[in-house]
Image (spheres, rainbow, N blue to C red):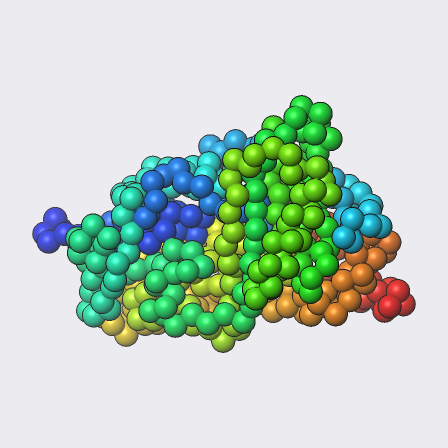
Length: 393
């Protein structure tokens, strides 16, 4: 909890760089703890963000109560295929179907919630540099210097703060995405149903997410296969007749997954979300990790801001790193095991999900936020499912 402070020199308790799900969540939690909190966001809010915009159960559970964001689709049906073949559609039985949102609207709502908790928001202001001394000095893109007792880096996969902390990544992928306006007939065909296509490149897949009169579609594959990934994207859009209209957005970005030993804190500086490399290695899902790590970072930043000395601040940062590693890090480690199998035998993953009911039920429970991948791998049902996969192999 941040202690009460006088109104002397302008020193912030917590400065958060980035107003995405991780940054806005960290700022809200720190402000709720009584901290004088500032968000710096380099773009003007609301801003477009390349992202599928599907909220799985773990993401929904981490949202602040009553968040004012429009649900563009509620998706219960999953269509799986393998490069357009062996297609099958399955329906979720869980209580938390995937909610489809636009990231610009989600991030704006989360930032508004942070502002409502007392955080000050400055958009159009980026990070130009920082010095980590007794207090942290942040130099902004506007030439100002901001001083703070704790800094949270939530400035995306190309984070400046991550470079300061020394974040290392074990996996980097290229994701290409379009937002395409669709006809009423096409919108009705996709309503309530999303597509996952296992792709032709190692570790690749494509997706179509319905959002009313717009579909978000994209592909992802390992970095270093740029032309092959772009060719896959062209084929993918043509296969699902999404290449006829001019996209509203046509972008690409790199997704990065942290190395298991990558640091999450340095002194009074923390990283969360994509800046920390907290992205699922198999599904490349990052919103749930951003929201949850943001909440944890906000609590830790409040402890750092209220620390009596540098040693206490270091302990708060170390506690944050241990907590993230034990929970979210364990999920990423388990997902790497799935990704290893997917790289070697994508057909086995497809066959398991679509032909072995216990595998689908386990996947459905994870998507709905009823369990985590590490917990699943310890269940008797998971062992039976893995045995069935072995027989399929």
